[in-house]
Image (cartoon, rainbow, N blue to C red; front, side, top):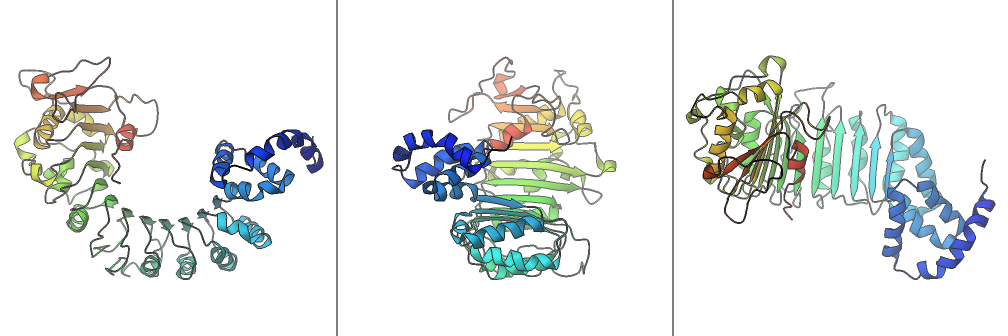
Length: 426
């Protein structure tokens, strides 16, 4: 049964009349927070119906409905442009804009340009388009972004100029999969007068020129590197290491790596990270390099100098393949049968990093799938540590208290839980 606007008004009118005088006296921010609760549950049609019943609710409802918009087709963008032109005030409510176009043509340029010119209060933009020419529209826009997500098949030549026009950026993420065009074209950021306020950077390095960034970013505290070679990691950490609080790396392991590269601590062998609190390392291996033999002799690991490299480190997360995890459980053949390669490695790390509270080792291929208790999730926690860091483990026996570390089997804290518990740098 289709409900007409008149019948909807008749059904809702008694309740609205009873509450209108109290609701409208509230501050606008509080009214919108109340309406946002309904929007978060997916009741967008219910909110739109309120705006048709009472014009006094127009601004509050539209501020909620238009705050975060996303589009996956040219038709939707044309409808959105028509809605903004019909009521220009709606454009001032848009704070987050997301566009995902698998097949973008030149016909989308004009409507998209018209939309960008109206979004004066936009602070977050996520754009995924196959054609790099569409990025030229961002060279002349009225908004100042704080969050910028860029994904494309080809690297836009104007990206550096776009970033120069956005000095307020605090988060920037990019990912390019170069499939066409001139691969010899430089793809990097060389200007040192851009991104002065950037605090978080996530970049995919597999298709970029080296170095991607030549000058340090003074405000950067969080860094995420995707598909990174060891040379890329060393170069980037030499620029940003002094201020980093969080580091996430997806490292490539191939025939260029030596045996010492297999351990996750190898990415910080030559770095100085005095403020670093959290490290997350994920291995990206081709099939023939999965399950490589790790040194059973811990003297060859080379972590003794890391005490001064990361004196404040508190959490270390390592995601690797299942075969490697099984080899880490290999017994060292000493007095105790449970004295494995991984337990020895964890003991060394806890002795080297004085503030390390948790070490998580997990299967990268089961991350985020299946039950929370994955079979190859191991969390090593410091027991009896300084500064009040005392391990409290329910339903698990704390072992080897004398060495001030313990093993918590079977997923007391999964990979996602460890990474999401990253301390806030702000």
